[in-house]
Length: 133
Image 1: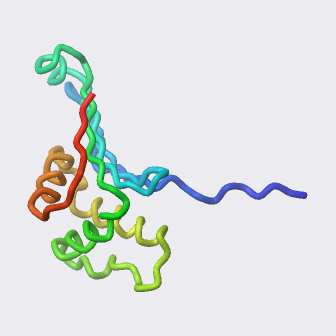
Image 2 (image 1 turned 90 degrees about the horizontal axis):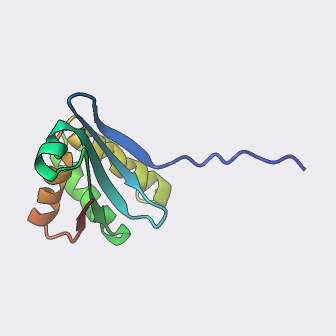
Image 3 (image 1 turned 30 degrees about the vertical axis):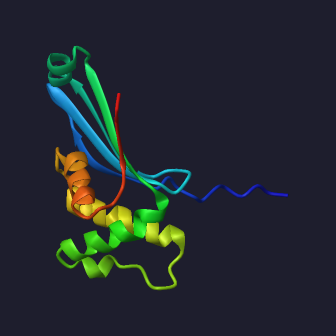
């Protein structure tokens, strides 16, 4: 019997990839439990000056049960956002990709993406966890 390749792909989009004296990398992804994560990693001069270490990691986690609410809020804020709205009978995978696409459109290129996303969640009463390392 021939083995079929695993066609599933990681649900992840890159929001920021800025190399430099302080390099900043920020991604949005859906984890294996279905939670939404925005995570950042700064490396270089700024973390060394602020924290005494050359790198700083930080992330926001939104429970899987709140993803549709986040998607609805973001769709209302993105110009032409309704084009990303999944059909009523969309699969979980389709909904996840719609959410990641709208996050990419909203926060792509924003060095403050994780903080701005946290502000959006607070303003709309959506619970989340913020962690640093």
